Image 1 (tube, helix red, strand yellow):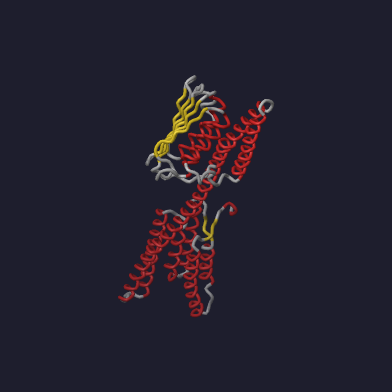
Image 2 (cartoon, one colour):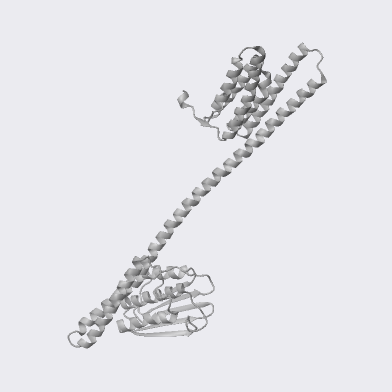
Length: 410
């Protein structure tokens, strides 16, 4: 049965030490009693020792066990009254009340406190009755002392209740803070996992955009060189040199991806220079007539600065769009247009190819999804206009007035 009972140490050790001091003061009275009566008050000392032992641990079981624990302490006090130890009653009742504050809720504390006050007054009444039997006419000083002792006891109960409530509230606040810190750590871990997942998606998208484009262009160069090798070896050599350059570029892209793409690959180039470079590569590698138009001011030409994040995002979108045109569109002409104002950057890529169905695998592919994600991250808009047999137009608008996070996505 005892093994089923659950106990815990006093949650506030300094209060337990305070109880020991109070019990020690009661024990000092027992010592004086022993000196005066020339006998050792074993029962008096036993009551104090039991009170000390019972305060070492407190029950944590359900209310019946706690009520039994409190009742046992009150029973010890009543036993002390039968032995005549009325001088220790206020101290012991205060100790019982302190412990009850850790066992019961607010209502239970008030019940134990009120019961302690009622029992104390009852003992005081018995004490007065006994004194009037011995001394028929009590002095005024006695009544003043009795009233002062009663008031001090009531005030002591109230102060103990306020003190313990404050301590418990502070402990609850500390526990809530600890749980909040634990939740923050969990949220931080989840945010780290989310950031890792986003970074992985970004790396996958960038590998698709950069390395896929380069390898596609490399394949075009090699196929052209193979076709020209027998009749026009001089021209074939030019395509092989271009293929070699693209191979070096592919290796660079792989290294950048392995290094988690920490740096912008074209951070030192303006928007127009960046787009012009990818357009020239496409024109030379595909043989498709490709035009580029610049409207308004662009970074590096006028006074308007376009952030590296926007430059890199538009570069990747043009790169992916041109790769898709070469692979699927069967186009003979492509137009890339850039317009920059003081508030917005507009980009359009138009081809005269075969177009496609928006619900097909091309329309829902990873490349187009990556474009949309890039523009959404910058707070811009992405539009796609296409019909079978009528070519395709990709339109992008990115505002310059918002704060753009500098996220590397080389």
